[in-house]
Image (cartoon, rainbow over all chains, first blue to last red):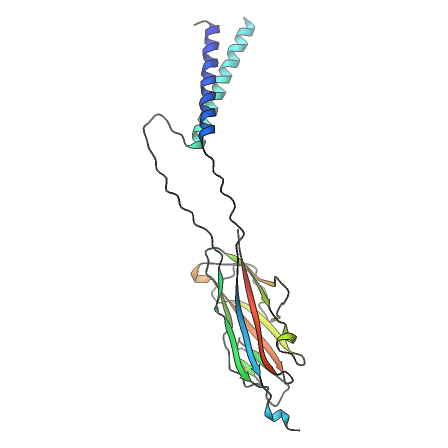
Length: 60
Length: 204
């Protein structure tokens, strides 16, 4: 095979490889998962007491 | 002929480069050729869920009064006062356990604590006090940044005080205790109530 034919053959091979690569990248789905949303939670508790007057303190 | 050799060399380089690109793409996207295979995929998503709750969500000292002397009473859920009781100089119920906060989600969280009222608004009278102290109920529950481990005045300014940077979610170590300390002066009267809100924020 003379060098001109070899060059043509090599370029054809390169074109085929490029087309295959392009086809793969175009048809493959790349899914990027979004970052999970900011997550926050709250809960409450109560503190209670009743204050009454001490009768002993009312004594003058 | 010299330029022909150059073109031939470049052609080889192009072929090798495109072949390498193809191999990289095959590897990256998992495309395998040369054998007959079929694959199935099982997908599931585990969402993180930030959730905290007060397992013990109430401290209720009931009704009581300040003793004749001195001029104030102390109510302390820690129960480690000098007199060995949770109530000193008063007739309220002994509350010997503070609030218990648990991380019942599946992600570690930071925790902020805020009170609806400060001492003056909650108790009133002359020189009242309303404080909290944070501790682990289980060893290592708060893996980092536990704060206010000694009695500290409650915070009423949102978002509150960051009491723990990293509250764990594993069942064996996911609980905090919030002890409460109240100083009741003799000139305070009436039914008193405050709400404490804990906010957990999921850590990345």
